[in-house]
Amino acid sequence: MNKDIIKEYGNVLHDASSITERPLEVISVGPKLDIALGGGVPEGSLFIMTGPEKVGKTVTALSFCANAQQHHQREVYYANIEGRLRKRDLEGISGLILDPEKMQIISSTEGNILSAEKYLSIIDNIVHTKPGSVAVVDSFSALSSESELTGDLEDVQVMSVQKILAKFCRRISNALPINRVTVVGVTHLMANVQRFGRGKSKIEKSGSALKYQVDVKLHATHSVPLMQGDTQIGQTIHWQIATSAIGPPGQKVESHIRYGRGIWKEMEVADLLIDFGLILKSGAWLKLPNGEKIQGKANLAKYLEDNPKEYSDFKSQVFQMVGMESED
Image 1 (spheres, one colour):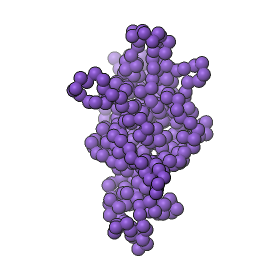
Image 2 (cartoon, rainbow, N blue to C red; image 1 turned 135 degrees about the vertical axis):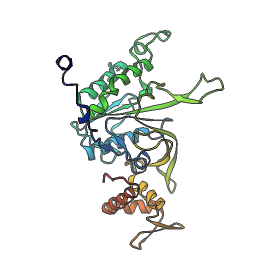
Image 3 (spheres, rainbow, N blue to C red; image 1 turned 90 degrees about the horizontal axis):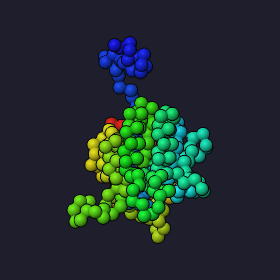
Image 4 (cartoon, helix red, strand yellow; image 1 turned 90 degrees about the vertical axis):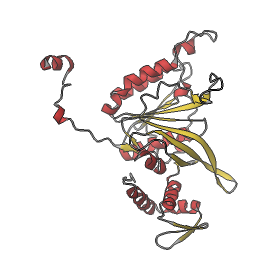
């Protein structure tokens, strides 16, 4: 019996006593989100970020890609479905490697508008043939089926994107952890016009097809401007951990984005140092362990930028306090 199975399907039978859990690498999102997630995002995950438009999801996804490249030597494939990604967006992410051997952009071209079926077939191919890679879908909400793209506007008999997504999720769910491919998906919220006074006022535009397969899910509730005097230099995103592969769900965390940098790691570590009491605060003044005083959290972040070893040491101390290891 066993020989027949092996002959037909290959070496798929294993001694139960020999099964060991393969250690998976955990990829960083940013210092504060990593702590809330229990370390970061395990490779081989379906990682979804949802929330209103223009809240910082794409920048967070690109920062995640930079961490995957720098610390884990991963190839990145980015599906630019919305068509809004610009060179300056990529160049504005600290550490993101744009070398074609490290990053490829998947997008429609003039006269060749890719349908949901084609985009997801490309991602499916990457999942099955590019082990260890990172594939980003930005966004699931912008996908249009072949019948939507080619049919008449009056035609209501079109293939549902939700059905295509459901099939896609079933196809990749088993392959992701085996091939250690991480799929990062962005979705947007839209008004729920069918709630009739009941249910959520906003729902994910991608529908419910993703929720049963997702390993890590972040919900951005809103963002607020990050100011330097009268100039906006970034934004603070308010996240809620909807699902985590390692840590507990439900936690709320603020993540900082600085324009031209991506996730502002130094500002996030400055927050953590104050929160964990490693730096004492007295009014606007902050006292370092060596006795040096710095006025204001922004100046503390600048100090950490100018002193990368200090940044790395401080970050390691914070992560050790919560029983985690820092990538830096």
